Length: 293
Picture (cartoon, rainbow, N blue to C red):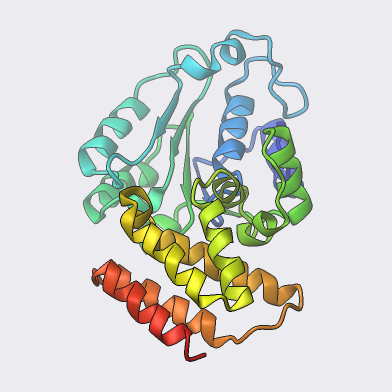
């Protein structure tokens, strides 16, 4: 296995493969964007390898060379934000077909919390009486949405958040610029750090934040008028305000002093927009309120 972070989990999974004591079902739990799916795929590769070396995939056998198209590996992901019962039923039918390339089969369900109750009940039948050669890996960032009966039939593997150093290494390996505020914004998630760094609204968010910091409300109002006039930016105004709020929190951590009420006003405005308030009006009220701070 090769990935940054989760070394303790890597070691434990290697021991499992080496000993042959592979469970019929696992639940990989942890916040979004920390590498759970990458670990699951590497674990699957180790399991399916035909010439395993001390718990590691050899990289040379048929199963390793054909890993991405190996019919003994099935990955189920949400469609339009949900995993429905028909998809799970098809998935489980595949489970009861004998392996064709490897000696085992691995079934991964990503974002398992998006399964509706019907889909979870369909999966439960497989978890109760799985074929001996099959292993299921459920991946979730919110295990509370899974049925208690499902959680009781899987071996839970808890993933910690990534450290800032680990996120920095991941960004560097992906040739992504490492911004200090992105590491802070990430809150342990490499995915969030990348989203922040690649966000096309960051530049305007930073400009607006600097004006807030300088209390240059006249120029701030002018910039917001530009945002309202730009259809693309206006559609992302909630996200822009979230970025400004994050930059405010980051500034506070750096001992930059400014009134915390500004953050409260940003949060209030974001909530209004989430409740489908008129964007122009919400920003106008924000500008009136911030001038009083």
